[in-house]
Length: 61
Image 1 (spheres, helix red, strand yellow):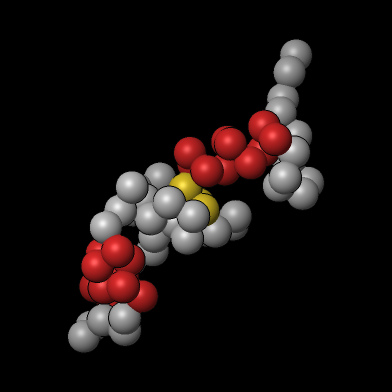
Image 2 (cartoon, one colour):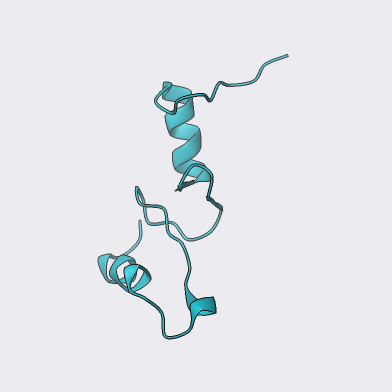
């Protein structure tokens, strides 16, 4: 779980554009962020398994 201060810092506009980074809005994780779904892989897997992410189904073969 990310600290509240780190979430606020990431939300601010950076001094230079390349310094900006994305955080998961649900848990605050920085790494393994998926832009298409706007969340990290951990939250994505959890919501996909519960069926709360529209258009995503668990694959099986």
